[in-house]
Image (cartoon, rainbow, N blue to C red; front, side):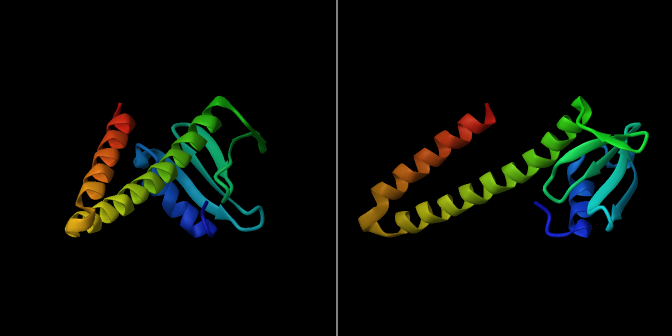
Amino acid sequence: MAANLDELVQYIRETLPQPKQIVHLRTNDQAGVVSFGWNGRDFVVKPTMEVYELKNEHVFITGSSMLMQLALLLRNKNEKTLAAVVGTLQQAEDMISNPMNRKKGLSLLQAVKATLKRLVR
Protein backbone atom coordinates (compact mmCIF):
# COMPACT_ATOMS: atom_id res chain seq x y z
CA MET A 1 0.00 0.00 0.00
CA ALA A 2 1.39 3.41 -0.96
CA ALA A 3 1.66 6.06 1.75
CA ASN A 4 0.70 8.87 -0.63
CA LEU A 5 -0.18 9.45 -4.25
CA ASP A 6 3.32 10.60 -5.27
CA GLU A 7 4.78 7.35 -3.94
CA LEU A 8 2.09 5.45 -5.83
CA VAL A 9 3.07 7.22 -9.07
CA GLN A 10 6.69 6.17 -8.54
CA TYR A 11 5.65 2.62 -7.65
CA ILE A 12 3.60 2.33 -10.86
CA ARG A 13 6.52 3.63 -12.94
CA GLU A 14 8.87 1.07 -11.39
CA THR A 15 6.47 -1.87 -11.46
CA LEU A 16 4.69 -1.97 -14.79
CA PRO A 17 6.27 -3.80 -17.69
CA GLN A 18 6.81 -1.63 -20.76
CA PRO A 19 7.11 1.63 -18.81
CA LYS A 20 7.33 3.58 -22.07
CA GLN A 21 3.70 2.61 -22.70
CA ILE A 22 2.55 4.56 -19.62
CA VAL A 23 0.89 7.84 -20.63
CA HIS A 24 -0.77 10.66 -18.70
CA LEU A 25 0.42 9.33 -15.33
CA ARG A 26 -0.88 11.84 -12.80
CA THR A 27 -2.37 12.21 -9.36
CA ASN A 28 -5.92 13.32 -8.66
CA ASP A 29 -5.77 14.65 -5.11
CA GLN A 30 -9.50 15.38 -4.98
CA ALA A 31 -10.44 11.77 -5.83
CA GLY A 32 -7.44 10.32 -3.98
CA VAL A 33 -6.30 8.23 -6.95
CA VAL A 34 -3.61 7.99 -9.60
CA SER A 35 -4.74 7.80 -13.20
CA PHE A 36 -2.81 6.72 -16.27
CA GLY A 37 -3.10 5.15 -19.68
CA TRP A 38 -1.26 1.96 -20.58
CA ASN A 39 -1.40 0.09 -23.87
CA GLY A 40 -4.55 1.88 -24.99
CA ARG A 41 -6.48 1.48 -21.75
CA ASP A 42 -7.10 4.03 -18.98
CA PHE A 43 -6.81 3.06 -15.33
CA VAL A 44 -7.24 4.60 -11.90
CA VAL A 45 -5.42 3.20 -8.87
CA LYS A 46 -6.22 3.83 -5.23
CA PRO A 47 -3.43 3.89 -2.62
CA THR A 48 -4.86 0.53 -1.43
CA MET A 49 -3.78 -0.86 -4.85
CA GLU A 50 -7.37 -1.30 -6.04
CA VAL A 51 -7.32 -0.82 -9.81
CA TYR A 52 -10.27 0.18 -12.00
CA GLU A 53 -10.51 0.68 -15.72
CA LEU A 54 -11.85 4.06 -16.77
CA LYS A 55 -14.35 4.02 -19.64
CA ASN A 56 -16.39 7.09 -20.59
CA GLU A 57 -15.69 8.71 -17.21
CA HIS A 58 -17.01 5.65 -15.32
CA VAL A 59 -14.87 3.14 -13.49
CA PHE A 60 -15.26 -0.59 -13.92
CA ILE A 61 -13.62 -3.72 -12.62
CA THR A 62 -12.55 -5.47 -15.81
CA GLY A 63 -10.23 -8.30 -16.70
CA SER A 64 -7.60 -5.70 -17.58
CA SER A 65 -7.99 -3.90 -14.26
CA MET A 66 -7.72 -7.19 -12.36
CA LEU A 67 -4.52 -8.09 -14.23
CA MET A 68 -3.10 -4.62 -13.57
CA GLN A 69 -3.95 -4.96 -9.87
CA LEU A 70 -2.29 -8.37 -9.77
CA ALA A 71 0.87 -6.96 -11.38
CA LEU A 72 1.05 -4.19 -8.76
CA LEU A 73 0.33 -6.50 -5.84
CA LEU A 74 2.75 -9.26 -6.89
CA ARG A 75 5.70 -6.90 -6.79
CA ASN A 76 4.74 -5.89 -3.26
CA LYS A 77 4.34 -9.54 -2.22
CA ASN A 78 7.66 -10.51 -3.81
CA GLU A 79 9.47 -7.68 -2.01
CA LYS A 80 8.06 -8.82 1.34
CA THR A 81 8.99 -12.43 0.61
CA LEU A 82 12.55 -11.48 -0.32
CA ALA A 83 12.89 -9.30 2.78
CA ALA A 84 11.83 -12.27 4.94
CA VAL A 85 14.33 -14.53 3.15
CA VAL A 86 17.16 -12.05 3.74
CA GLY A 87 16.23 -11.82 7.43
CA THR A 88 16.17 -15.60 7.76
CA LEU A 89 19.53 -15.91 5.99
CA GLN A 90 20.98 -13.42 8.48
CA GLN A 91 19.63 -15.55 11.33
CA ALA A 92 21.18 -18.67 9.81
CA GLU A 93 24.51 -16.87 9.39
CA ASP A 94 24.46 -15.78 13.03
CA MET A 95 23.65 -19.32 14.16
CA ILE A 96 26.35 -20.90 12.01
CA SER A 97 29.01 -18.54 13.37
CA ASN A 98 28.29 -19.87 16.89
CA PRO A 99 29.68 -23.45 17.22
CA MET A 100 26.91 -24.33 19.70
CA ASN A 101 24.18 -23.51 17.13
CA ARG A 102 25.92 -24.54 13.92
CA LYS A 103 23.64 -27.56 13.26
CA LYS A 104 20.50 -25.47 13.81
CA GLY A 105 21.87 -22.78 11.48
CA LEU A 106 22.62 -25.31 8.76
CA SER A 107 19.12 -26.79 9.13
CA LEU A 108 17.63 -23.32 8.81
CA LEU A 109 19.74 -22.70 5.72
CA GLN A 110 18.47 -25.93 4.15
CA ALA A 111 14.88 -24.90 4.91
CA VAL A 112 15.44 -21.54 3.20
CA LYS A 113 16.94 -23.29 0.18
CA ALA A 114 13.95 -25.65 -0.08
CA THR A 115 11.52 -22.73 0.20
CA LEU A 116 13.32 -20.79 -2.51
CA LYS A 117 13.26 -23.81 -4.81
CA ARG A 118 9.46 -24.06 -4.36
CA LEU A 119 9.06 -20.36 -5.15
CA VAL A 120 11.02 -20.66 -8.38
CA ARG A 121 8.97 -23.56 -9.72
